[in-house]
Length: 228
Figure 1 (cartoon, helix red, strand yellow):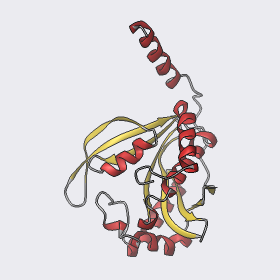
Figure 2: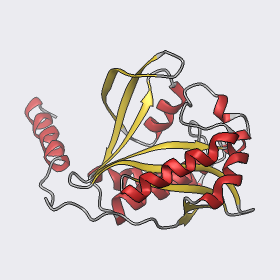
Figure 3: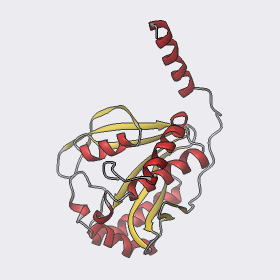
Figure 4: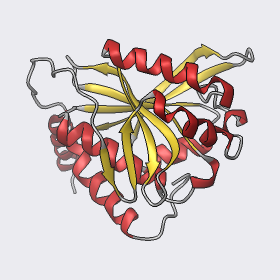
């Protein structure tokens, strides 16, 4: 391909990713149950607290590095109430992750930083019980969340934010097909006094069909993705 042809191809891809979209804000999304691939994402409620207490104790995930958002078992109820207040305020959607085979609550995930005027949101505040790491639950959960964001809510952009030192989570997000947008330097001071640089990733609506096909292939085959 000539330099001119390559430039025109790149310009075409940029045009596709920044094409005109409706300017009316999206309606406030309502909590719904998402199900498939052996799991169910149930709108979060206080009824999930006992299961979530077991999930954070499983593998001691609240003590893992880079997990200040994961509450200790005794703090789960207060954490859930805070998330539910965000849901009520319209700034977040939150789900408990339930394994369908035994109805066990194995984690939590949210849509946060809802930007309805700009058709964007962030997937974050996610944690999963240690025993379901690398079992395919994370991949299945991300497929359900991304499908809901792009296919049902008609989002333009889905974002992920990761601690710069959290190599495992960065690899997992990159394995989804998300593109790195940049790094917010000295973005947060954490409870232990350390400074977090935040790596920002995103998936755009035009990229979703290819990523969806990749995820569905991964779900259908052996689970070998990082932290899948």
